[in-house]
Every structure is written in structure tokens, then in C-alpha cells.
Amino acid sequence: MKPKTTLNLFKNFLAIELKNYRLLFLAFANKKVSLCSSMLLYAFILLLNTSITYSQSSSCKATLQANKNRFTKSVPPEGTSYTMQISNTGSSNSTYTLSSSNVNSSCSNNDGSSSSSNVNLNISFSDMSQNSISAISLSPGETANFLVNVKVPTGTAINKWNCTEITATATACSSYKVSTILHTLVSDPNQE
Figure 1 (tube, helix red, strand yellow):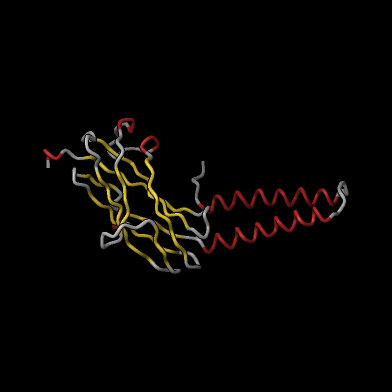
Figure 2: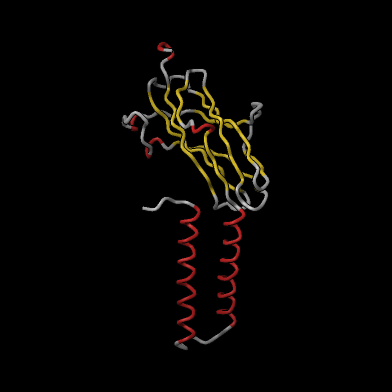
């Protein structure tokens, strides 16, 4: 199965659009339908939709990664932070909305243990000055650092893993998302 990257999604979209154009052409070529204003409107909407999607695909691009490729950490009871880096590699200004989701059931733990006993952690975002944020605005070519703050809820089991997907969604192109997965081990405070 191909990964759900923007390029693969765009290729799939183009394949579907080309199939629609082919069917429309065959219908006109075989003269099974008459040319009417509704068919012209349908063809115009398809063309416009393809143009908008193509222009968005080049304007909404980004990379998201953990600083120094540190996608794995252990977290003491008082919490920890991952330093993340987002870059606008598109051709227009963009605001990226940040979100997190628990992906324990679909991830692999770094030590090979079963993810069935993974735990949930509390996630928040802040700028490098510890101010709470939910989005980042960047010009083309601009890069920004931010923090993913991880807190351990009271009563959470120790020596258990957590997998959290961090996603940045371009507000101008809501279908464009870039994400990465962070692996966090809840450490035993008595063994530190």
C-alpha cells in the first residue's frame, strides 16, 4: 500500500479526473448525448477543480521534524518537551494549525514490545519562550521551531510507551497535512 503523501493523493486525484474527462469525451464522440449547457457547466467545473487543486499542491508544502531527529524520549513525572521544526517549502504564505493524536494502536514501540499496553499522555504546544500556541504562520522558505510539551497524567503506569502523531494542517489548503510520530517512554522516577 502506498503511503498517504500529498503527491500520491494528487496522483490519485488526477487519475480520477482523467477518467472523468475520458468518459465525457467518449460520450460526445459517440454522440450518445447532446451538447447542452449542463454538460458544459460540468466540464467547466471539472477543469476549474483540477486547476485549483494543482495550484494548491504547489503552494501548500511543508516539512515537520523533530530537532536533531530526536523522535524518541523518556518522560519523567514532571514532563518533557520535544523541539520540533516546521518549514514552509511551498510558494505562498501559510498558517499551519497544530494538532496531536494518540496512535498507540497503530504504532510499533522502539523496544519491540506490544503496543497494546501503551499509555495516553497529555500534549500541548508552545513557542520557544513557553507561550502556548495552536498554529504557526510562515512565509515561503521560512522555518520555525516550537515545542511539543508532554505531561504524564497522575496514575499513569511506568515503563510504558506512548505514540503520538503531531500534525500541521495548512489552513489555506485544508487537505494538506504533514505529520510525524513521537515515541515517549514513561520512565520510573525511582530508577533515574
